[in-house]
Length: 299
Image (cartoon, rainbow, N blue to C red; front, side):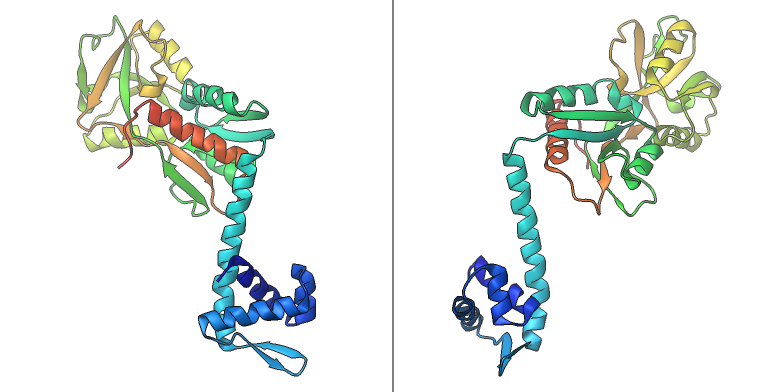
């Protein structure tokens, strides 16, 4: 059995006429008839009944049609994807990411991507995690880098790695001499945290609640740079991800545990929307950057 047998089968099932089906697949009527007979002989089942000039599908043919149509569609999509990757890519891809990823991960990925795909522009929108989800659902972006959505069945999430959150304080802070701090030790400590609607803030609040700790939140910001700037000017601490620890040699980085605040970033896209070759290539670039950085893989 060859691929052309299946294409001829689908064409005849669609047209129910050897003449029209032959025209559709650009072969002679005799060739089409011969190929259909070869297919029926090979599988040992009659797929069509010839009643005078009429062609009628058998029940078995109807059953086979659904599976063959699906298989051919997947093959065609795969071939199109391969052709798209092999051809020079162009245009603009639209990516949404939470603010932390814009500090180092996104710039590293774009730089790597531009080395292989210099004719593709990358437009990045820095958004809160919930806004990334909404932008995907509204087709404003093609790919998100965020966290697992809670209630969006239309969105597909691919975890990339597991990252720790750290306490960051100035060198004059009372906890600056500690290498490790329990979450309960931050009870009544002054902190600047991300906004309440962010996935990271919700995770941190859950960790505090699990040990009965209530820090004093003196400020909320959606910018990690702003949080660290406040830490440098005051004796307020901040809880940020390891990706945010860039150019922080003047600050003290302290491990947190009991419970350890972890989060799992990943790729997020709209499951019902086909991805362009360019966006698939960019997603592969992100995977390679994460792998090269030897980040802890998700379980």
